[in-house]
Length: 112
Image (spheres, rainbow, N blue to C red):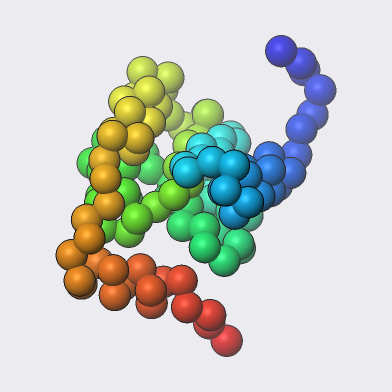
């Protein structure tokens, strides 16, 4: 472990590039609050990053929004809860119902 500073946008970029280049199916990004990494990750087309603060949000992010990146806040989420959130995120499969698929397409569409 290093005490050297590491900028969270770089970490988010690395995770997103891994997903977009088919080197991973899901990703996790962490910064102090989880906000900065989620903002950065969501700048990438095809990335649906969800900042989750509860197990229920992790479940819904995967189930309804087909989130492919989980964001967590190191300073805002206790380690035990973070592990529970991660487990739920990894175990939940996206719901393929037409309404969810349609909304995912709307989320992924370009906005001007």
